[in-house]
Image (tube, rainbow, N blue to C red; front, top):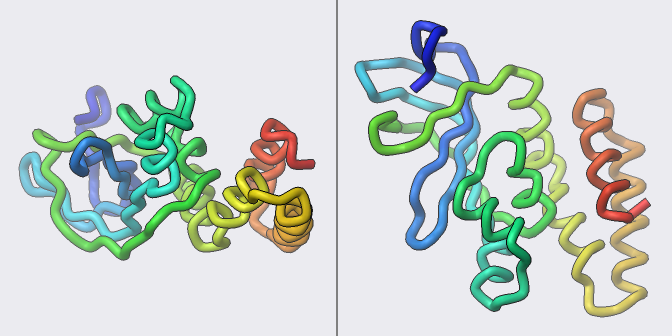
Length: 168
């Protein structure tokens, strides 16, 4: 629940965290309606399958575990540089049960762009391919994808993440 803003209103964008077994899944979307503590969201649900597998196999660091335990709009990029499963979402979320975080439109467009541009798969291949040749091919595909991005905030974000992951 948001304090000091009079609550979330239809048309605004949200980042929703919901329990999914031992981990969490995330939904990004736009509020369609608000009824008490329930909000109707239309967007995309994201299950961080690659990160879940790495944590379950004991191959992930503390930061990855923390992101899975408590994802938010600022740390979720750690989910998005590994394989994810995505699903269209159009349903009700109960703010009394799930974490609903307001995000601005630019943040939504960047997160949505990561999914629409298939960046999780490309980053995962560049970071985890078992062969040097596979990693180099994936890095080339990432560079090509980055040069084709036209949305400025998304492009800046992808470049920053790629630099920090030492992929450029």
